Length: 479
Image (cartoon, rainbow, N blue to C red; front, side):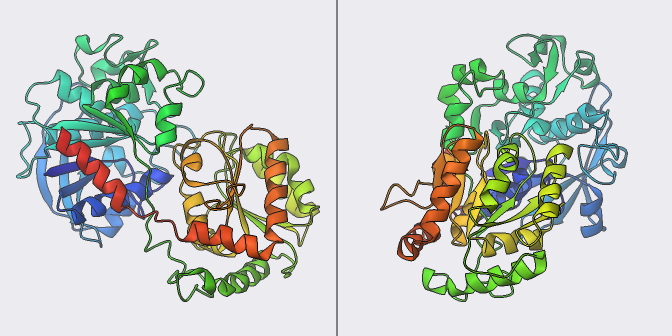
């Protein structure tokens, strides 16, 4: 089968969240199963730098509305995955974040930029395409490619079936009514059972309504988004299409996130087994020195690698962080986000030197060091479609504290389960519930035998892409 994987991000070149990692990992896993997968992604500056001589392999003429013609270039990722690079410099050869300008606001023409990406995905899945390769399935990801199923529904010549994966329902691609014509969609698309959503055009609703199959990134999240509380206004539609909705837990890149070979670690876990955890103590001391923390092994080190936002529950941690340090414990934080939370964590680090270290921003190397060096990882998200860091933590022998939501609920088993427990789970999204879970974790950390059991339960679980890839293939074949 031929699969077009359409995405607005792909690691390591363009990544703002989990989508970039998944776009880099799932296609190779599908190719390993014998599927012919190609990734469609805009030709951003980082990809231009990586593949400056990518040859043009097809060109689409004017695509309707205000959508311009555009070229497709071809390159090959280091893992052998073919890339189809959408080349329209006026839309995609821009600095920084693919969605935001230098002022931190959405690019005002995002509807045209990602309308073009969706339209090209649909064009490739139709008889109009001039590329000498045509997909059987167009696999769309999040709102940025959500219009592709609608284009294939409303415009003639469709050949491919469509799959729509929701990585985060909160981002819905909402634009005004005038965008319908600018995007070259017909009047018939503007109705309750089309792309219209409370007076706006929604890219995400278009995909959810018109794709032949829907998936999301964990089984629990697939159930949560069908509830009015967590359905972000889309719950009714998702309940209506529940027979087409499947929750498939994401995998992680077990080569990049491998504590036995991790290039960012001073002391890799020389053999991937719990008996190698002496290396964890060495990495803890290294991180403490690098972060300016007191080098001591008599108190737990809590780690955070996250966007500092309300969704991620970091306001709950900020509220109790001083109490956590009083346990006693240490805290290391890496991330950026809401200004108020950045300021709160900076102030804590200033007031509690040697106990709290905060880096505002992101560093891949520091993220790996924290996963390897921390004793306990904190992930108190209010909602989390899948989450990857809790799986990294489990793999690195760092039991996580998580809220029971989405993929966190599907991967972390509370320590109260003596056989399968691998972390600490709380339910109410309150600072008090988080603090209780943190106290339980700190207490368990001091019980060496029990702690090794928790670490072993996490480190021996398989979080690779083999099983997710098999389940996606099943969906493709069913279509």
